[in-house]
Image 1 (tube, helix red, strand yellow):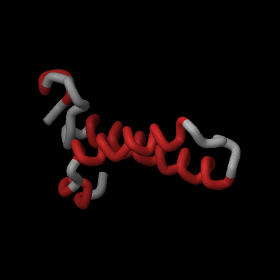
Image 2 (image 1 turned 90 degrees about the vertical axis):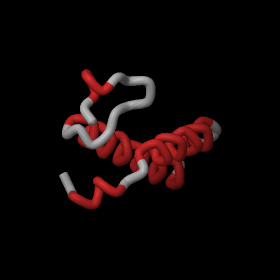
Image 3 (image 1 turned 135 degrees about the horizontal axis):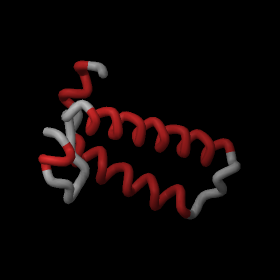
Image 4 (image 1 turned 30 degrees about the vertical axis):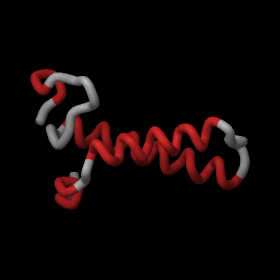
Length: 69
């Protein structure tokens, strides 16, 4: 994992992802904009999953014993 991810505000990123999900909810997934935004959403998911696996973050409402850091 990249060291730059140590400086990510994971809680802010989580809130931003929720906003993006609300935007995507009303959008045609097959449009060029929809496809691009869903691609970014999948990238964010992968980054968050890797960060959790390496102990850089925990998911909201998850205890640290199961989630790492």
